[in-house]
Amino acid sequence: MPLSNRVNNINISPTSKVFTKTKEMITQGFDVINLSVGEPDFPTPANIKEAAKRALDNNFTRYTLNNGIVELRTAIADKLRKQNGLDYSPDNIIVSTGAKQSLYNAIQSMVNDNDEVIIPGPYYVSYPDMVTLANGRCIFLPTDEKSQFNITKEQLEKAITPNTKILILSYPTNPTGASYARKELEAIAEVVEKHNLYVICDDIYENFIYDNNEFVPFASVNKSIKERTVVVNGFSKSYSMTGWRIGYAAGPAEIIKSMNKVQSHSTSNASSISQAAAVEALIGQQNSIFEMRDEFERRRNFIYEQICSNAGITCFKPKGAFYLFPNIKYYLGKSAAGINKIENSIDLSMYLLNEAKVATVPGSAFGAEGYLRISFASSMYSLKEGAVRIKEALGRLG
Ligand code: PLP
Image: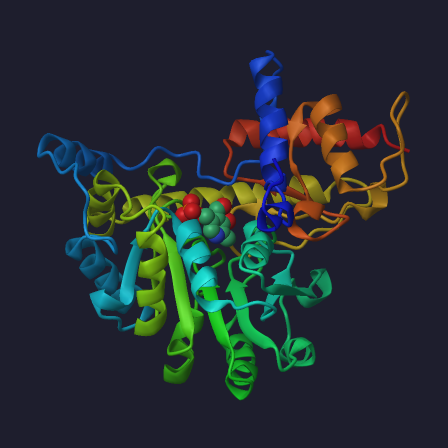
């Protein structure tokens, strides 16, 4: 059967490939240290689970409003006002099946054929394929350690053409842990306004920011930026709820209405049980967020020191999220006894998986060759054991 051109133009998420191979090895009984995961290793807090149980017992099991229950959209509006200084009416908010669905719906609603969408790299794996599915054109803005993995105002200005429509921002960033200070965001905002661009800002890691750094939402930079920004966020990371599939977007009425249309013809409402649980996540105790953040910061400090102690490795110290993104270019072109030459980050990731039984994600999955992503959303035991195994395996490459 000839498949649609739309589908032929995109790829299965490259991180799922590593995930599948890792799962296969675990099923085969290998003792794999999994540092490839993109989710907190903590259970969902008890108060949230209790709220879901109550929802089930009360038979809160039917279709809800397509854009989400009023209680949840009101709780989200309160959160955005109190935590982020952003004023949205519940009507300007849509609840979706994960932040991913909000991103997808926003891109489907905003991108026309050949519209250019600027994506700073390294990027979250799904952005380019979502843009391609909408027949948009991805314009990548590469960054590296020298710019602390941040784009600059000048770099953005240079990439803009008459076809540029949207900038996708996300910080703290998956996979680098980079983040922006208010001044840097203001500089980007100037260019955005000057060229009449729209912004999709994915704030999903907002609560995991370290060293007392401040998270500044892009939409909060000024009023006119808020009017051209779609804020995407969710419960997966902050409340350790990846499997519950619940996220949301807030933005200009016209865009949110269109996203509601797209959603009404795909999944309809997000799970009623997850919505009830998400209300409790927002109105209940928030300690679990701070506990997770403190633990991630402790783990970041540990794994950063360990990975930097390997010969030839340089690494940006993540300001947030839960990933380390070391530069491994020193190891390209090297090999070990019985091992083919390591040509790229996929080879190195596969070498570590096969030889050290440590799962990582190759940088090329995020559009950045010569790097690996190491998740520190893994137990301290896994990080300690993983660091020892990585050092031993890298030491064999020459
Ligand atoms: N955005 C970023 C930057 C992510 O890293 C992820 C998950 O890894 C998502 C969105 C997806 O989040 P959700 O589970 O809410 O769909």
